[in-house]
Image 1 (cartoon, rainbow, N blue to C red):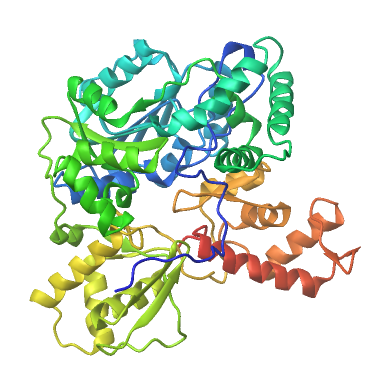
Image 2 (spheres, rainbow, N blue to C red; image 1 turned 90 degrees about the vertical axis):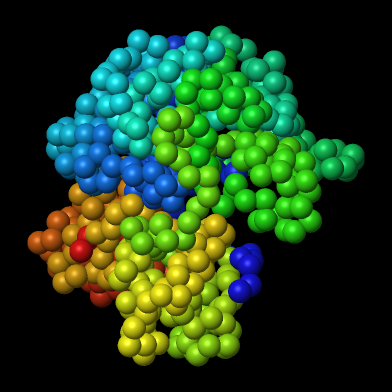
Length: 541
């Protein structure tokens, strides 16, 4: 099996971060900047399906996402928690933020989407109390590094007190040594941008200074090359990010080992990274893995710290559990039996040869893999057919056997398939979920979109959330179609709606540089949109 290699991504979700950090901070930066809302997008790594699957892999028995209790610390305008609540109406969601105007927006969205299972509280984490062990999943994204010491201590206390015995918590934070480099730009901005003035004025001053830093000089060296790369990254990110990361008063980066120590002192244990492949030094090659293991042995925290030093990592997404949880230190392949598997990989060939010993290539957003194993090829072909949703391991094993013409697919064959799929998971080529996604593989005659995405489209949001809990950038044509996909309209009716909006000037389509309202052209665009919506995970079964 060949490792993942580089490839070009063909479908673009909403702007994502590099490994270094999230592009959209989800808390408020300061009272002085309260004229700026922070863009709250969904983060798939915080979803109960993702967290629950990780818990199962490590020997825990987390609550099923369909009936669970979730706490989000720092919800901002609700862009992460509200789609979860829409997806799981029988679950209970509690979200906290200390910015009243942000919460007002979140409440408006909750009401507009008719969500009755989410409670949005104006609260300071230092004062929050609920029943002990009252939450199965706790999410704290984009908060921990951006609050004072006493608030970080309160986050640790709240998580330990309120996390269920088999619960999982997600905490993201800035890390050293990588932030020593990125922090250099922050330090310069904090020096050059006055603390006085409105948020808009401070952003304008900051952007001007960043342009100055990018001034071309005769000097060419690695430092200037690094600076140019960082400036290019910042230029692509929002003003909200610039305020919340580089101009905010509090930005506490720390070494991973210190973070893990503080969590241990609070009664919490590190499970893994939310991006599970990142915990394995083998992804960096045999020489790097050997060097890391030589320094850290098999101690999980020590291995992660050495990886951070080696990679100059500046951002982490930690998964934690209670220190008394029955955590297994090793991932066992047989635990896949209770999970749902999905894959973004597609066969490189139109009709891949499933015979043993014939190598076939499978391509996805993160790269390509090659394998000559018949069972693995059959499994990947099956998962591609069910994308963007997935299959339980039992169903996948059965269909794999069917494709290979096997009367039975049990014993060692089944165990080998599980081991191979787990190996692909550790390379980022397989997704694991705690429950099935009700995502349609293709548009129905009268397609139905995820209700929360329909709501977002109806209010003109530039991003809409898929059933995979991913934010996708949408245009005006997308919004017109998405908002009307409630299962009562066929493609012709959706096309007519888009034409009506074009005549009103809401939708703009051009051909040869001139406005177009041709019915056949709009019908073709609608068909393309519906297929794309299915691929992205907007459409429901």
